[in-house]
Image 1 (tube, rainbow, N blue to C red):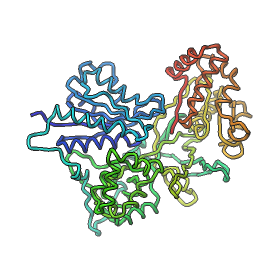
Image 2 (cartoon, rainbow, N blue to C red):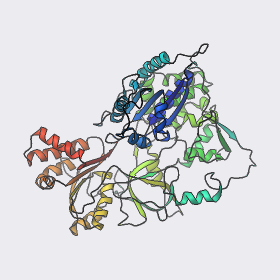
Image 3 (cartoon, one colour):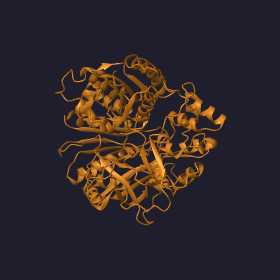
Image 4 (cartoon, helix red, strand yellow):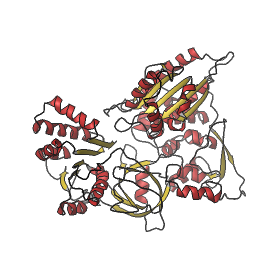
Length: 602
């Protein structure tokens, strides 16, 4: 009999694709498949030729790029020398997660589906294109697609005789068992449960990464916006001396935030957990690796502070698992409704619309919450994901220093308590004058590449905190003696949120920067960066008609990128005499050869 094995591989940036992959893994276990769920870059891609049944779940990020945890897989899969019959034994399906407000909607999933087909794979179903913009989110596509997928898979791999699908009423075992240690157990030596000092010395020499972040000392945390301005924006500086970290303009720093002590305390009280209790984790199934970022042994306090994302908006899977622990009929019915396909509209208005956190949801189900077994915590609540910030300084101007611009996320919904961003609020709360304050971080290559040739003019369009990577680029280019630096900066008010004003004015006075500003609320008519582009179209055309000028755009992904692209195409038409279709094609060619690069975020 054919072995009933299924491999689920995911590429996830924010955790949605991972959550969906784990859902498929649970559904596979209910159908008695041996199932592994892995991040694409954790999987040895050379083994793909031996796999018979694989489901790929992948998100698309930024400008149609693969998520960080599938980049190596992506490079391998698109090697020119792979034979066209490499994957002829593979039955596969691709589930994409994207956002149709971006131009390259689900680009990665479509391209992956096509590439596996080229290599001889047999698609079980057409590629599924989940959309964040749908009223019910990606589940509107995922639910019916999964029903069709299981029909297909069970036709190929019927249930073994005498076995039935495990009922959804039965709770599957947790991924790990949690064993509490006796109170008198000696404390482990060596920080994160690493045996011996040699390993730590080796780690200290290695370049910092997600598994080995560098604990950077916070040097300064300065508010740049006026105190009466609604938005709190900080310029934060870290000391990275001795870390081995190097970066150039356009690179990104990843920061690992943590939960607030009062939230940790509240969580432990709700679940009746002793924060100082120590435990070790053991995988329930052989072959499951332990969470790499958790020390062994670990305290409940460390688990909740540094690992469990109790401030994220809970997903459908959270309510599904929670319903199994409920001893209260009313609460159980509500939880089951939230985890059903029919209850998704109601779940959206309970959770997503008001941005209710996991901790707040637990408050609303008190009878269930106090009955949650501790070993299910890691199945129930995702880990805290690192946050990415564009680096806003250059090592050429500030050796051994790393600076970021942080807009502190705080907004109102219908819930009485204002919503706050976990990482930005945590960073803003840190005070370097209160001793040795450390922040875990590492650096990775960004999407934007600045020219090496000092004679290449650079046009940078960075409204709001979008100016961060351009501050790094300008510092770097000025240090290298490059001219031709043009910056379009936009904000609301000159007197309230003109970040780094004195710095820009000094560079303008020195003749090394040409600056255009748009203060949208300082006059009756709103003025944005796209208006300044059109006003200065003659200069821009002169620069653009010089074949090597580069244009960069960074900032909020809502309307601004499209408005800027439209303004640049208008310059090509009005000054360059192009027709609308010629301007569009010229702009697309600039994107293809990286003369136009954009980094936007939602």
